[in-house]
Length: 212
Image 1 (cartoon, rainbow, N blue to C red):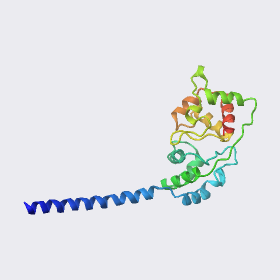
Image 2: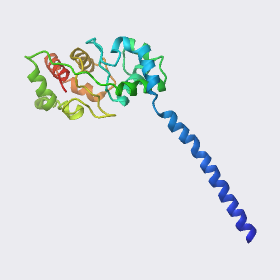
Image 3: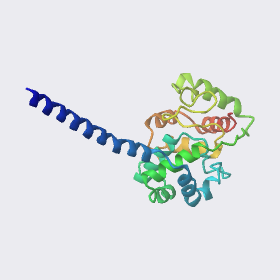
Image 4: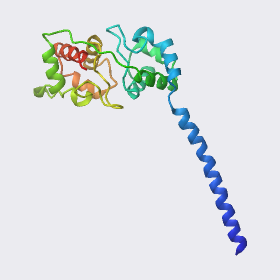
């Protein structure tokens, strides 16, 4: 009996030793999974800065501001450019050369940069844009943009992108692309945009540009 007890104790010690060693790779992979902001900055500077600005605040109205955007959203978009789920020949070319780690590093670096505010420019349409953004269009079942993107345009991390201060020209282009079936990587936005006319799209995009 004494010998059996000794064997049981020895086996238990061996199991514990194996278990503790098995946890080590998990710890290492957790460390590896942490984004490297220095690498993200370097990759961004080499690949993205010419179009999106040195700090993610694009000065080109047709190219989106990326600073302070939710990193999970940015990673998703880069992956979908690469896989053709989001169709854009220029972005596909850039995304094709990025690994998953590159995408994560770039996205988290961009999230760490402060977004510069924008401005609404069309005084005749801004009140219409505000009504749509905050209240939707009830008779056409258009939901309020604020419901998903928040009242100040900050969005909801991991789910809905930050919109505040975004270039109106870029927002118009994306809403039209959703409406016309050119951009197909978000069914919810396709359904919303399908109910908006050109004037409403322009109005809400201009209002978004001035959100703080």
